[in-house]
Image (cartoon, rainbow, N blue to C red; front, side, top):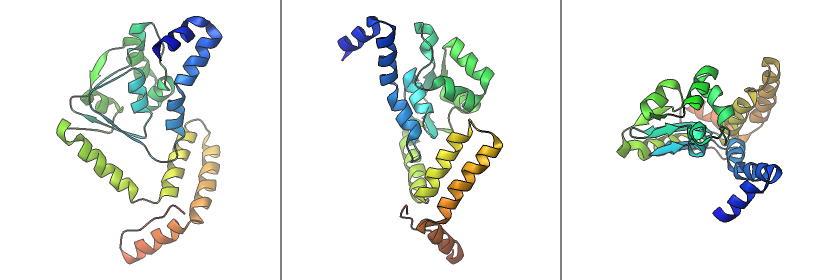
Length: 197
């Protein structure tokens, strides 16, 4: 509740840090989720809401959507992973500029700089997101999970470490029922039916 939050914010640095840590756990859970995640931004994604959206694997926006890293205008620094996400998505200098300014920008600009994959008319957003989700649901789940995990992990590894991670993941994929099904579907020119095993 807000009274309890205010008490923790004003209690002192250790309690305050614990509170901030606890409130940002959803961002960590989102990052660690083994399945692909999709954000559909329809409205204003501000501050933590913006960073939760950017923490998804794929971000789509309605044409009327707006984004802002408003923190600086409230005397705060980025949270919910924004300091890690922004430079990886749009580069260091542009990330700093967006964070330093705290301006509101539209979906078209977000797509232009790489914060969102695509922008759709407001009334088409959810149908397009559903289509994308259905496309993903037809893919081999183990391979999808390992692709997500490896791409996330490799942002902080050397090329050599990346090859080792890929090798381990590929060896695991080669041992799945889904790999056999994918090969059979390819040879028979049909869609695969995957079970996540």
